[in-house]
Length: 483
Image (tube, rainbow, N blue to C red; front, side):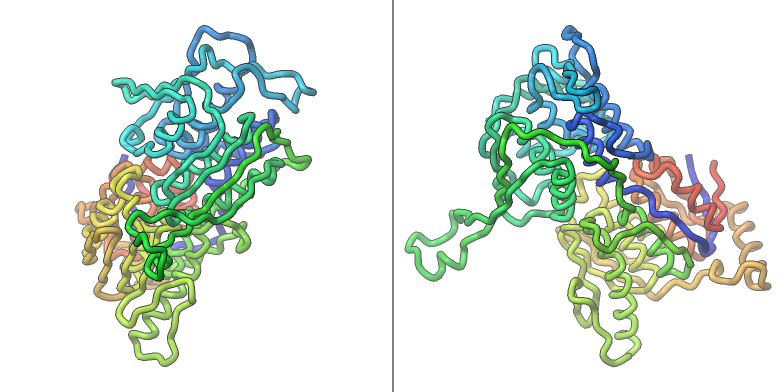
């Protein structure tokens, strides 16, 4: 299905949608505590529905052992990567259930085999080094021709080594799983831990459910370091992060049910719309949240300072969390990969030359998100180059679209008539959503400041994270038609 969006600013109040990242983690903690109702998580997206349905299957009551439990992860990387180690670490027979006065819940493990279904690009997304580490601890993996993945054997505790530059989701899955093992264990994260805020969110949820985790640095051996133990050897020492998790812990349901925080990731789209001229008040966001994407407000301010500097205003500078160069705004996206599509729209709409680095992992998302963002920028006639680990966006000037005119004014009526004629004549900017929810939402926000309507192919991709996105968009005053 395609969405056709005419230029026009948004106006109104928006309650931030629940955080998808927080929701995944709260659901897992609640089911491991044996009391699903202690997490009040709305069924707001396909990814959250996938996690909830997988947990329901995994913890289904009864004593059947003939069928292999099948967990349908759909296209959710979080669901798969979190639940693989958790399912493998669960006891063979029982987990104490707090919701039913200690009655034991039987797990449908059969002969310790569990099948995971994967859709879309999920079978292509890497499981290494998580798979190798789980195999070292007693788990066997078998891939089917249909993309399904079957694991067998129970995962033991012990020492796990994970590169910090691949996916923080591997670390989250192990952090949830190790308390279930008898011996517990440690997770040695080598190199820089990318997407650190997501691990911080995991640690917060674990504390909420009574789980103890200790964190400490460790010095990594560098094979390139000199053997003399001298000055140059010291320079090449690297520091990693070690999470130590005692075994045999019990997840405890909180007395007061937990609710997910407001989502900075999805709210960022409408905060950027404001930077392009809309007036949307977004409520329910916490500045104290561990969510890394809250930095969007600093980046928007950075674009303002960049343009002030370009205009020759003295003392224009950027906040310390951003890179400042005389000719561009430098953004390290290693901790905020989900923001990259809307950051590109922000750069285009505000006329900010922006260099995005630390984003190479975006090539293995729902789409090759670096290529998809470039295609979006091409559709907007914005020069954009895909670099080794990110993007260089060099817009011509801040956007000034007909949609900027006040509704009801002469200019506004003229713009509306021009938009209607453009839509009828098929004179739209065309964007392929690439089956990627964040590309679709970024294109919709770009439409608010575009010079003519934007037609987005595959707009229903928003169901992955925010099915009500276009309802929200329309409620804020921008009419959307579908075909």
